[in-house]
Structure formats: C-alpha cells, structure tokens
Image (cartoon, rainbow, N blue to C red; front, side):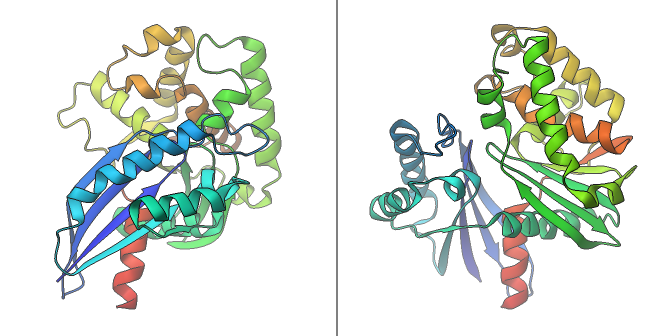
Amino acid sequence: MQNLAIVDLGSNSVRMAVNELHDDGTYREVNRVKVDSRLSEGMGPEKILQPNAMDRTIAALKSFRPYYEQLPHLIVRGIATAAVRQARNRDDFLQRVAEATDIQLEVLSGDQEAYYDYLGAVNRLKIKDCLLLDTGGASCELVHVKNSRDANLISVPFGAVNLSEQFHLDDQVTAVDLFSAQVFLRERLQDIWWLNDAKHLPLVLLGGANRTLARMNRQQQKILHVENIHGYRLTTGQVMKTFERLLEVPLAERRRISGLEPERADIIIGGMLPLVTLLQMLDSDRVIFSESGVREGIISEYLSQR
C-alpha cells in the first residue's frame, strides 16, 4: 500500500487530500483539508500574484504538512492551476513554495486540468453524454463528453474571482454591470465552435462555485448530509431561481444565506455566471454535480500507469 497526498493549489482555495492506494487498484480517501487563500485576488490585467495572497497560500500549504509527513510509503504531488498558470511572477512564487514547503508544484496547462476533470468525473458518474463545467477562481474548464469520451476540451481564463473583480459583482449588482458581464461571457463562449455539439445536453458541474450552488439548494430542501452532493441534480429553473435570489440581496445579507460560506459570498454571483450563460446558450434542462474532478483524475491516471 502507498499513501498519495495531493496538494491542489487553486485560484480561490488550496486543498489537500490523502488517499491510500491499494495493491488491487482501488483507493480510499483518508483525509481532506481546505483553506480559502484566494491566491488570484488582485492579480488584475497585469496578472501579478500579490504579496498578501502569496503569503496566505504558503501559510496554508505549511499547515497541511502535519496531516501527511509521518505517513509511510508516501508520495506527495503538488499541482497548481489557473492563477499560477497565468501569473507573470509565477517562477518567483514556485521557488518560494519549494523553499518553504519542499513541495515542487507542477503547473497544469488548461488542457491538462480539463482532461483530469474529465477522468475524475466521468469515471465516477458513469454518464455518456454531457458538457462538463469546472468553474474555478480564475478559469473555467469545459469538456464535451460524447459516448463517455472527451470529444473536445478547453480552458478559458475567467472564473469566480476575476469576473467578480472585473465587473463589480461582489456587493449589490447593478443592471449595467450584470449586462456587461453577460455580454463578455457570451462573446467568448460563442467563439468555442464545438459548444454547438453540446446543445440540450446536461451540464456536469465541478468547482467551488458549483459546489456552493448544490449546498444552498440542498440546505433549502432540508436534505440531510448537505455536503454529499455527488450525483445531485437540479433543473435549470432551480438554478435560475437561486441566481435571481442572490442578485436581489446585498453582500451582508448574502453572507447569511444557509449553505453559502460567508467568505465565498462576494464571488458567488461571478462564480455562477458562466453556468447561467451556458444554460441559456445550450438550452440545457438540468445540471448534475460531481464531487470528483482533477484530484480523482490524477489518482486514476497514476493507478493505471502503476
């Protein structure tokens, strides 16, 4: 048996998952920790990681060490996604991380991130045809799954944090700012020619903003085990109703909504906008949530290679 610790450095949060890898090709998650460090905060059009955001993230990475450093037969794999991928000062940041934590972060390309999302989600959900959407803090990954294969995939450089900052979607949202954000998204998504092939298909959802959408609805429906969202479904109408509810209230009131983490309340509208826009463009009638994504995809690949 081996222990595999995956440290996943995202644009909004840092996650660590420890899995036991068994000789028969199965695995079991034994620990999972998350810290919201918001690495992409304040990057702006210059795409510069800010000192406070880097310090918060490195502190989070250090806090993970006690969870895995004493484990036998240990492999540690560190990955970084959109915020680091886009950053002009990423080499300096990667060096700081290595010196402070001994973790050599691998910066995934957008296509790699989308592919691992596909591996992780499709293996667990067993769905043949869908559009997969992973909404992160600084990017969205899209995969058209056809006959259980990844027919097309792409990563686009906008997500919950940078959309919220660019279009002032954090507090009370004006009609003008909302319209500007929707036009921006629609123009960029219309450039992805193969999205037409995904019309009327269900959307399989990953990423922090989408998980929050699931938790809010499960809480509202008084479903036990709010965090158990894998395979959970909502109609497009339910998604739109939740989005409208969020738009109606200022940030202070949004922070009190059950199922919505207070520290995510300022980016949830920006985080839901890609989903809302795609549902309208593709005339999809439902969404399905996946708890499995990049980390599970990496484990699946590792086991198959081993």
